Image 1: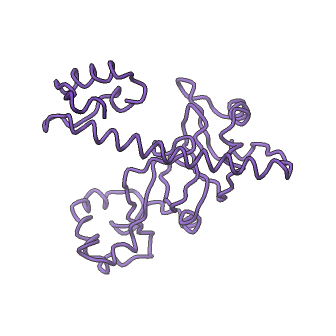
Image 2: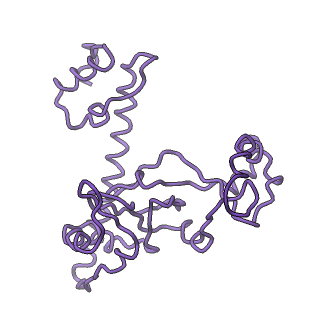
Image 3: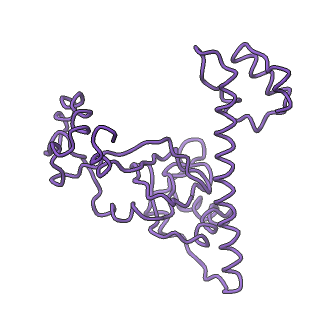
Length: 239
């Protein structure tokens, strides 16, 4: 965007299925270059055009008839909804995968959405009762994972919530969403700090270090030594 501010018109924040977890989204900083068929003159966006040019030969080999830079399935019918708050969820999951998208993400084909930002509905969708129902109607994938296609989820019965309970459930749902976001921030900040212990040639966390919150301090120190061949300096241990 520094090369051409107009590029921002085409760049949309983007989520894949694995970025959606219970109560939260975990974005990777991905963006979709939104070029629906017949809607964009790519020469009006020279920075994006030049970035895409190395991929032109592969793009021209696609089966459908469209310009080389255009999206194959742009889902124009949904784009106005993508840009607003909504409930999002992933396709294949081992637990309730519903979260509130407050930032207008566009979605990959491993995600689905409900065009509402209702925290009370979100609370129900993340409940054990809802999971029990979905387990009874969806396809079961290998490993016990559910396939939450929209034609399954749309069957979910939603009971009327008494007015006296609605405000309480809404408040608890919002707390869960906010706490999940705060937890993600802490997890990411600590993970980046752990990488300060890594040698330049090995700046990657093991699975245990990614899930550092499940380790006691002794286990954490041992994993740092195993992966990075380094000890936590005494002066940093209290921190």
